[in-house]
Image (cartoon, rainbow, N blue to C red; front, side):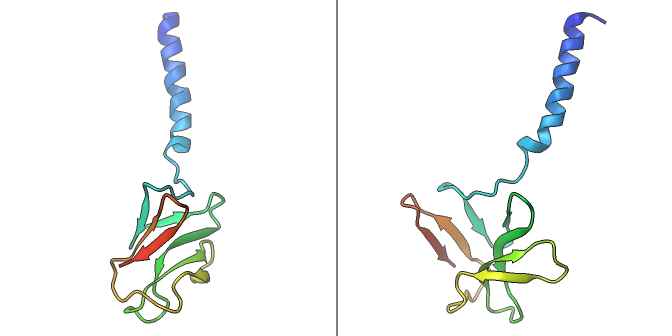
Length: 104
């Protein structure tokens, strides 16, 4: 096999090893991203998850953080616990001034 072909094969093998790192989920929400109902963000270590949930009443939705690796969803923080969303079209967006907006 020619040296150039060997180099190309070696390069492709190295590239294949990097693909999981390139396609991994980001645990930071930028100003151009949002989290919508049905989508979540997982922490870098995989221990917690951010997203929308309903604890018992399906007509009340919350944005929260819960432990990911537990058999039952254990919520550790809810952003809108006093004012739940009443439909499944919730969206979390970050603004340019480091502020966040939660709306339905």
